[in-house]
Image 1: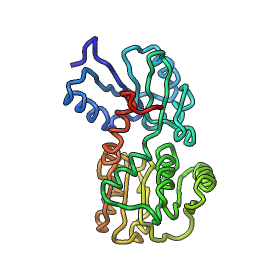
Image 2 (image 1 turned 90 degrees about the vertical axis):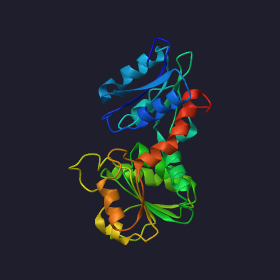
Image 3 (image 1 turned 135 degrees about the vertical axis):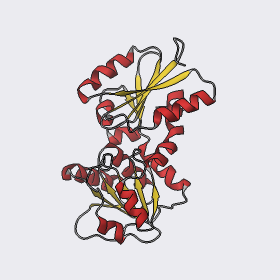
Length: 268
């Protein structure tokens, strides 16, 4: 039960109903007997700056997690960001220091890759297609390039956003052939949906069936969406006989990373 002595953490986003972090964090706090709780806030973009300003004086709040669509906005409003978050221009976790300073990191990419490794999926020398070049997609692209991936194709409804990400990756990771997804489908070892398409029942399929059909039998289809756990994309991949990684798996892999930031065990 939340009382006056309870330390709080928050998660902000919109829509917030699809996130799993409150259940994961609150179960963990209860299991270890910690008087701490996570609260979920459905926050519209126009109120993000007001929220961040309020957090500075929120004495019983230790920090907050950031989800769609506020990751870039929050990064521009806080005091310090990790080198990874600086490169990405986005954060997904913010720690509030006792003096009101706010520091942030971006763990989406690290959590995604850790989930793949837990499944035994090796990335070095392989090819990947990433759909969606927003904050989460960019973080995952960065983490994939760091693993020794051979080539990475990127597709986004906003062509300029995808092109900017490709240019940054090309400079930072010349060993990884980064390019925009163009032309006919070719076999990709890994296909990742980093777009919000699939969150709602009537959303369009973010990955063309021809791309799924072209994947090798040992290929992996992966999602960042946590609800529904099996999106139309993942269901199509399963029907093809491919291995899939859900957004919930990525979220669980991130949990320990986020917890360390909230506890002050990770420096940001």
